Amino acid sequence: MRTLSVENGLTYGIADIQKKDGAVANGTESFGKMLQESVQEINKLQTDADVAIKKVELEGSGSIHEAIIALEKADISFRAVMQVRNKILEAYQEVMRMQV
Image (tube, rainbow, N blue to C red; front, side, top):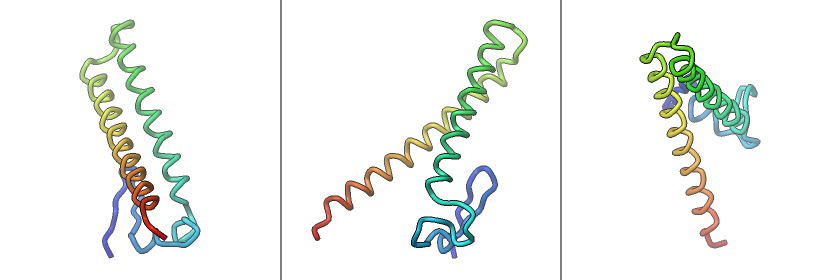
């Protein structure tokens, strides 16, 4: 079984995700909930980046390096979510093109 790793430390096997109701086989989390938590985490990263930039610009107390790192983390996570969204849309469009 191939293993997928998620950045926050959760590890799921592909066979574990293959449950009929969309929940993980051990019943802990559905795909929708996992996606919602990922979006919330990305929002938090973007908010943290904004705070770090404001500290550098307005207060002068923040580190430029920390602000740039926070900004890059937010950017990379946002790009990753956009790729997931694009793949989901492509899969949906492919299913809609199928003939019954």
